Structure formats: structure tokens, C-alpha cells
Image (cartoon, rainbow, N blue to C red; front, side, top):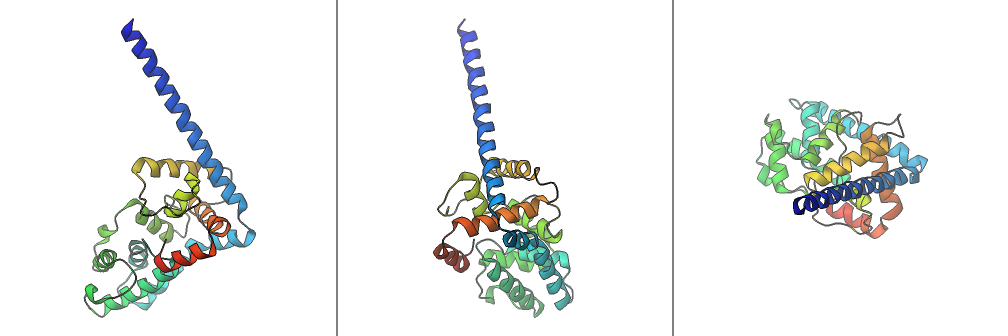
Length: 228
């Protein structure tokens, strides 16, 4: 009888965990759909063109620097992106490729990108693409190289805030594999309702909408200075 009671109790706990997980999933899906619906037409146009514009940047860098492919340029943009605003990301990518082309040491380059990421960018430019590591930067690269038409969604601090309902910035928060998978699963589910938009572009609309609707001007200024 004791073993039967333990079995029943274990079963009930498992069922409760499943129900809680499904409820959490439904809540996150609803948050993503609400953020998408809240986007203005202007914000949607901006977001849907975002990865296409980033791809154009990679093409511009490749054309300007002999021996640098579009793929390599996209990897450089992605690998230096952590803790950078988009404007700083663009400026740093140009500076890194120009510095590398002059065969100068990466340690001499004083820019806003994190030193470890500058080093990775130089290694990528030297023909070692494997130094693009990590789910966020790999997703960002895939979204850039495909102009937003393929690849997993880029999940950064802003996407975590939308998923959790946090209104304040979450500092130094790197999601676990399970958390990232939960957010990606919810994004895919939320995107199903809008069949004409690619997942990466759906994510971009949510990202732009959230920043516009919830972030204060002061906070956005801080992000532009310190990076998202």
C-alpha cells in the first residue's frame, strides 16, 4: 500500500508539473502576441527590414575589404554584438575589419566591444569561423546571413524581459538551456498565428515594440551607451 501511495503521489506531482509548464508556456505566448499586436505600422516596417539591413551591412563590409566574405563579415558583426548597441556594433565591426586588414594587433584596438570578442573577431577573420560560439551570437549570425528568413530567434535581455514580464532591466542574466528552449518554443507558437512573417522577423517586431512601449527614454539612453 505504501508503494502504491508513493506512486500515486509521484504521478500527481508529475501531472501538476506538466500543467504548470503548459500554463507558463501559454502566458509567455500571450505576452509575445500582445507585444506583436502593440507594434505600430512604422515599428513593424522597421523591424521586418532589420535583419535585411544587417545583411546589407555585411555585404558592404565585404565589398570594402578584399578577402572578407559576406559570411565572415556577418560572423564578425555577431560575435562582437554582446553588450553593444546596434550603432556601436556597426562602428566596431568596421573598425575591427579595417584594423585586421592593416595587419595590426587586436590588442591595440581601443573600441567599445569587449576585448575577448575583438580577439574572436580577429580569429574569425583569420579563417577560424568556429570561434563564433554561443546560442545567442550563432542565432544572430544566422538571422543576419539569411536576412531574417531562417535560423532560430535571437534571444537577448529584452526577449527575456518580455517572456518573464519584467519591466526593469535584468542585469547579467544568461538564460539556461531550458529557459532558452522555453522562450524559443513560445516564440514559435506565437508566430504560428502570423503565417506570412518569418520567425526571426516576428522576434524583431516584438523586440522593437517592447523597447518603444515599455522602456523609458533614460533606460534606452543607458542601453545605447552600455549596450543591450
